[in-house]
Length: 410
Image (cartoon, rainbow, N blue to C red; front, side, top):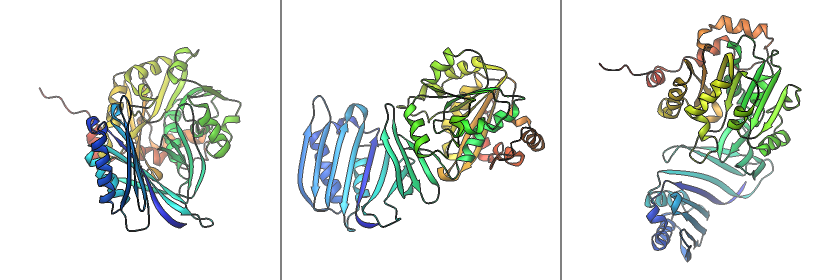
């Protein structure tokens, strides 16, 4: 592209509420941030709202900085746009994060300018707190919009294909999504002797449904998603995810709350799969990672039956979320097993978990997995087989040590 400027969108959360509510402090901090970036301040305009909140803009020779604060939420939304190469807009954002006491900052950086034919026009920044961020080049925007529940984006990357993002969080990429979706489905399905009725919670892009329907014994597969628009956006703009699964006569699409579905549905399920978004505090899926919800899942499972779910980061330094999920599952199910897969587009290892009263994928050896896959005619898988089955169950020593229960002292 013909670069004209850099635009950074900064999301600052867990900030000091007293500073977010103080107009003078916010105004002075924004002016200082512009100076820290090496910009020349021209004009300043700020306003305090009732009962709380501050908005303002600092006009600089190179463009502008703007802010709006939500003191009651400890949150500030900041835009920094600069032209030319002599300024450092990221430095301005980091100064503001430090001044406002933010404990989590997410930056999205866009290269602004005139696109060249076939050229990239921006970046999406995947933040992991204030210390680490991974930038993904965006070649094309297929869709961006807001549904009744969340922000949805489908973006194309030269290496990983089409990304699905929900509320700014990466969900999957078409070039390597098969690793994630084969892992969340097949270890649980293959350990069940004859899965006929399956419920999928979430998974609106349709890839989990696609993998479930590979099993010839499946007679009904319910896909339960709160957000009908996500399903429709993916069907229209990224049909390669589902690969025709939505049109399969065995598929049953249900648009509504997963808990309400399980409470009201008739009959039991051989397999329940939770492909829900991560349980952030603001996420509608947060309560669906609780011990109470896991108890409801167990009540809806047939015997034998098995529950499989995406269960957070699987890297040594990011295991706290997965450990909490394991502990909650273990209070409900006698058998809980962790699986860990490397997802290139995530730049991370990802953890999954199965839970059951009687079924455990860890009890299958590689030859038995291959035998069952062959018996079911599942010869089109790209990731999962007997050898990778053992790999999924063999995370590093450091990960195992973190997840294994500590012996009690007497």
